[in-house]
Image (tube, rainbow, N blue to C red; front, side):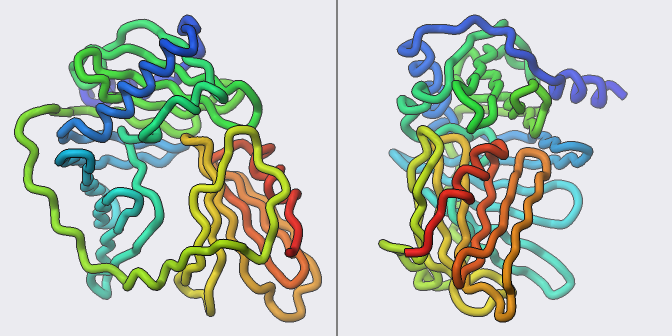
Length: 310
């Protein structure tokens, strides 16, 4: 009962209650949070909640010089472990057939949510400083990232007063409704970092091939979004290769998948929304294009409807 009350308090929904600070001060706060998330050795347990789904996850971060690696273990439901190395991650999944490896682009996870360099975020988010709070028994300062337009979600972080490490993070929509939230229930920072876990053997790197020019031209990106990744890759249960493009403003990410359209497919247009994720699939010439991202519908729609076959 006590644990449930503590958890409910930690995951309380936010409101924009902070005081807006000058851009330079806001940028300084964001960079401090980013540095702490990557460079600080820490270990703890946090809860992730999205809608009516909740997961408990153990996390460790190991730092050595300019690089860091993280290990996340899901403590309930199906047995899963995620290891993050630089700009990619490997998920280990256990099922009836044994252990399976899934290689993914990107290595962001709570509490490492901000980009390595945060200065550009100020162009698209204003920063507000709120009151002191307590999460996992530690004092933290509320730091809010408020979108300057309709193309991105808002964020509320609670950064440890001493280290800057986010102890809590909440993503909210334009109406202030919570989309997903994370909060430590216990965390320990500093101390001597443990040896880094050995990277598991993964599929050969030629499964991911850089792509200079794709089959589809993107004629519009929301302000602040730039191309981060453009590759050809194989996807599970798909024949052949798929173009995979990733666009980001540093916090929100939009992916575009381009593949040959199924034979006899005359047209298709489908869209869906699930929590923070929005998706639109359409047929464009001989291709089927799927655009999805952890961004508001206007951002996903703007990308998906401003495409042309090269």
